[in-house]
Image (cartoon, rainbow, N blue to C red; front, side):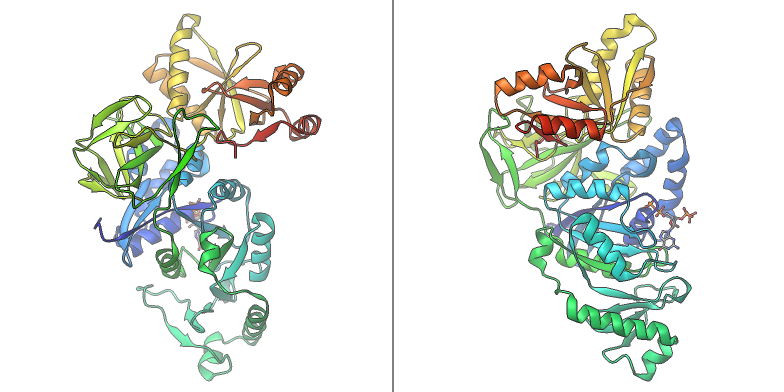
Length: 533
Ligand code: G4P
């Protein structure tokens, strides 16, 4: 990807079935990465319903497409996949720590759904700018005003429509572009980059009447446009960049309608690589921080994802690095801060849809993959020699918990080693009860447990039984002083666990329970992520 192109590193967030895969495919089509729509879907279609073994085989395909890069409108677009469905995992959240903006897909018949709310919470941590696409207008949809209200109320973000739907379902005619005051017609065409455009500043022209062809729909559009004119503030880029306001577009990804406009809005408004905060040694919670700017001369990057078994034949592992400043050049020696070692990177990978290639260089906003023999962890920082640690790549509160029961007690050591490594790699979270030393695994998606089970068996030769645990959540704890800490921990001993970095956490048995404890100990702070934010 040319050095001159400003990077736009983004991800799609949505609830399963809202149309993320379909949209991804269409974006790649507009980005000319794929020639034929259907490629991504057919591969991921199997992937969603296959069991773990098949899935691992599929991973070679779907994971290399976890970063999709293409040039578009003078930007280098990097679309990072956020796994959903059955493979929803902490990786889904972590991907959001590596992007500068997000495309939120909403199923227009359903409005905001559970997984979108969770993903939005992660976006809020860095006030990530969000572009919204109201999908599936070719089907019966909620009223557009109702949809905007739904978004504003549930996600507390101001919605500014840039287009407006004309009808829905079988009566869906197209959208009114509020910026150009033109109608963009919805008709299935072989070339969706060239839809029919109708001048529509005046909705009473013969052309508009002939096109909408339905008195009620035209009247409704008139009323809607008046309301928008009266009530809606205009789109302010600054507020979008602050994550306070989201531009909203309507359409149908399946029928390619509204997709190009959405990509244009992303290309035009998405921020380039942003400054990022680093901790200075000794890297404690209250250590001093400084900002790394993308234009800083020296190279810095952090690991946001580690993928094992990318290629079944090699059983390799790849650490995905997000470049934050400077320029990385192939064969450069870079400093791995946590181990204090310098490494020469002779075969960094870049990802282009289904392919991976050797990267000659990488700039802020780019993602490169390093071959990893188990040395790297999520959140690791790389520099040109400085001791720094990027913040903002935390663990996220798991919602599902399991105990591992060993089938062969002689394998306890291997189990411990395997679990420690898998938790450092970010595959699953490992908690230890302070009272009984019992080990508890925590995840945000069920598939994480399947991955752990499989990898413990194949890489550490440990067979285990997995038993559900009654915890429903986890909170990282911050105490105001040692006295409160002692009192809190003695009163709640059976709920206290430590994470893999020895940080105290409160295991939640029910929301009600949590509320009571919070009321009893107002001085103690409970956090949903290990960045204490
Ligand atoms: P996801 O990745 O967010 O889970 O959603 P995905 O794109 O897989 O879409 C979920 C279902 O919704 C698919 O149907 C897809 O074809 C459909 N869909 C996506 N966008 C639109 C749209 O704009 N309009 C309509 N009508 N449908 C849409 P499916 O039946 O589950 O799969 P398939 O057999 O069609 O592939």
